[in-house]
Amino acid sequence: MDGLNLSSNLVRLRRERKITQEELADFIGVTKAAVSKWENRQSTPDIMLLPKLASFFGVTLDELMGYEPQLSSEQIRRYYLELTGDFVKLPVKGAVEKTHSLVRRYYSCYPFLLQVCVLYLNHYMLAEGEENQKKLLQEADALCDRIIGMCTDVGISSEAMTMKAMINLRLGKTKEVIEMLEKVADPIRISRQNDLLLIQAYQVAGEIRKGRSYTQISLYLYLIGMVGAEMSFLSMYAEDLGRCEETIKRTKKLIEAYELKELHPNLSAQFFYQAAVIYATHGKKEEALGELLEFEKCVCSLLDSGQALLHGDAYFDLLEEWIERLPLGEQAPRDMRLARKSALEALSHPSFSELKKTKEFLRIYHHISEKNSHAENRTSDKNLRRKKGSG
Image (cartoon, rainbow, N blue to C red; front, side, top):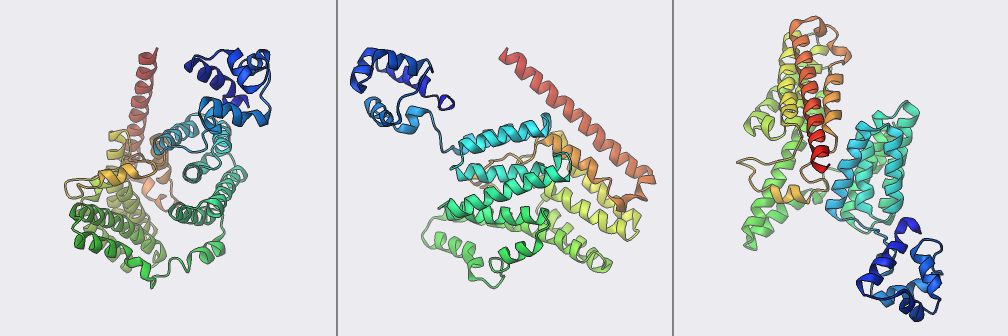
């Protein structure tokens, strides 16, 4: 009960209304000493008295007890960013315990539970040993099941289903993923036309700005999906160098046409990395190094900025409102320090074993490593200035 702040709320509410302990005791039908003990956390009111107390102060039971079953979007973002920092700075066990505490408190706030699943999916690899990593993924899977089974918001339930599929892939449950998504992802489903139909409806209704905004959002997401699909294409046809080279050529034209290296450097970095792996696997050192050079540029662009933020540009100039409505807003789902570490670890891929002997590969590695170090120093300096400012 103390964790719910009942005692402090009683004191606050009574003082705000300029009511004495004796007046409150008379209304409730208890002694003044009983009220004093409630406020000093020496005892708690009988459960049957709680509705009467709430009625007296004109508040809900949740407000009386300080219970917040739901979080605002801003609160969810704040908790998420705080937890991503904890996973990087603290021992993983400590970060997980803190997350558990919040999950217990907001167990009926399904948007928050969904973001906890995102948090675990992006940080489970930091846990020590495969067993602990698997345990975190299983916890996220269980939270997805709770959301799917209890949440009445179709959109959140649908996102939890997708998240569950991603988690099950990490857990090696491929048959379950196929059963879960095969019908939903069927390309002949008419629901795939929903975006175009909504845009047409906006246009006919004269809601031009809404139509333009939704058109930009759809195109932006299609572009991201297209590049992601091309990476999957490379993976599925990895042994077919000719097809892969054609895929790389076409995707590069897409990235250039929509200036994705500036618009979404993280996505572009992932594509160039995948292309480098393909070329290296086929023994094409020069081409592989060329792709790693593009990878380096995108990664260093992110590190120079100090943070990975979603944003539009002169072409996609109506994305801001949509980005603001996203669960995490413009923020990336992983702490930048972890992203920096991942970029260096990516260069240890077995297919790069021959490239590691070249000066150009070593230069790329050291350049990213130096950016990594400088970025860490900037982060430390910012944190130090914050502490001094707050002191």
